[in-house]
Length: 270
Ligand code: 13P
Ligand code: ZN
Image (cartoon, rainbow, N blue to C red):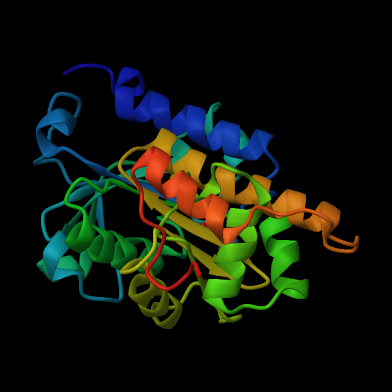
C-alpha cells in the first residue's frame, strides 16, 4: 500500500483547505469540502474491505451508493488540516442507498464528517446529473459575498448581473450565474435539498447571511469559481455606496459571450 498522505487527492485537499483559510473564507470551523474519489485510486492507498466504523447519514442518496468521498470533519478548523490530516479529514464510502457511511480512513479522534454532509451529498447528486465529471462540492464564508446578501436584492437575475458587471471575466467563469437561497437553518436535510435544487441550474449557490456553495470538476476549478465570485462581490462592496459612472453593459457582456464561446444564463441578459 502506498502512503495515503502522499496521494495526489490528499495533497490537493490539504493545499486547498489551507488556501481557503489563508483567504479568510473559513474562520474557526467555518466551511467544508467534499471530493468524490476514484475507487481504483483509493484502493492503491487503502484496503477497501477494512471499515473502521459506520456512521448513519440521515438521508437517502441512492445514486451515490458505493461511492467514496474525502470530506472535512465537523467542528474542524481548516487552519489545522495541514498539521493533522487524519484527524481533520476522513474518507467515507456510502452504502445502504446512501443512508450509511463507512469510515475507511481519518476522523482519528472519533469525529465525523461535516454537519453539512446532506447539502454536500445532495449537491453531488444534482451536479453529477448535469455533469458526470463533477467531483467537488465546496462551502465557505467569504466576507464580501456574505456582506452583499445584506444590502443587495436576492433576486438571482439581479444578483448575477451585478457580479457579472463587476469584473470582465465573471461571465466567462460562471456563465450559469449564481443562485440564491434565503436564510435557512444550516446543517439540515432541508437546506441540503434546497441547495441541491439550486445546483441543478448553477454551480454557485449563495446561502444568504451565511456563505456560498460551489461545485466543480476539481478542487482548483471550484476554488477559482468561488474566488472569482468573491472578487466581484468585493468590488461591489467597494462601489455600492458611490455613484456609478461606468459599468459593463449588456452589449459588452454579449461580446464576451462571443469571444469566449460561452452563453450567459437564459434570460439574464437583455
Ligand atoms: P462543520 O464544522 O460541521 O463543517 O460546519 C461548518 C459550517 O460552515 C456550517 O455551515
Ligand atoms: Zn457554513
